[in-house]
Image (cartoon, rainbow, N blue to C red; front, top):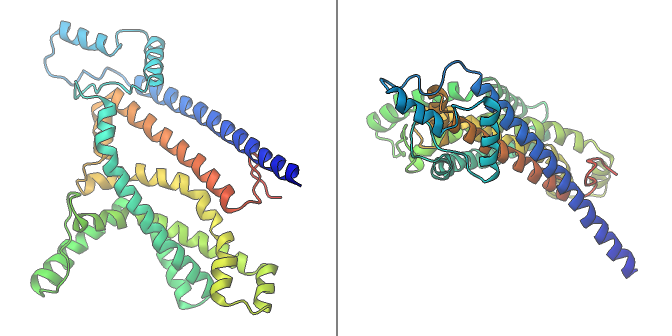
Length: 337
């Protein structure tokens, strides 16, 4: 019996190692494709990054081109860049000379990550409960209300929602409810990231789409799970509603939400670029958008590579969590027993 247990444990570890190896290898290939496609697309643009610089003497421009290897053939530039990436060096900004892309990411990404994490937590805290409520109250007013919120959240882009929120909280909430009526409410600020009064609107604007997606997934899966035979059997045995929902139904209904969380987290972080600009949040989005306009090759490439690597990492983590939540999933196959 002991030998059987040991062999099962060894088999699980072997499958886990194979799973991780496969995912990491596929992730490395995906990252290489992202680097390659982004690199060549950027360099296909006409001209060079220093064309907008005013009155640069030819010899200074030649030195700048040499510093960034832009004086060499494109395939040579590409291999230079791959060599730097392999060392973890994302390069130096072409517009903010002397400023490393790694440094910009280290300083700015924590702010973007903070905004993204708050938006994800907000989405889970709101989306999961209202999805469950909609499923349990199927066909009733609360179900219709949740579906209306879901349709609005999915249909309205985050930057449009951000503009509407700014309009309401400036013109109605701050100026009328607080300044005119003197209601004891916290005044909402529109620009910055220095306190809770600055963070409420960006988090709502960024997270509402994900709230809508999670609510719809939870509702649909919960309705499906509640119709399963084992749920009917539990009801027949007199299991309490609380135990039925949270012990039996919730664990299976949450799986689709877990599946989308990796791409969703990455999408929220990348989708925060516009929100960061609208609310003047000092995150990574500001540098990314500015670098695109300024044709700062190294900054665009560096941030793109960073976010691609982050997305791949999150997908691998979510795959592992999926297996832990549902042991029926076979490592490396992704199928049920």
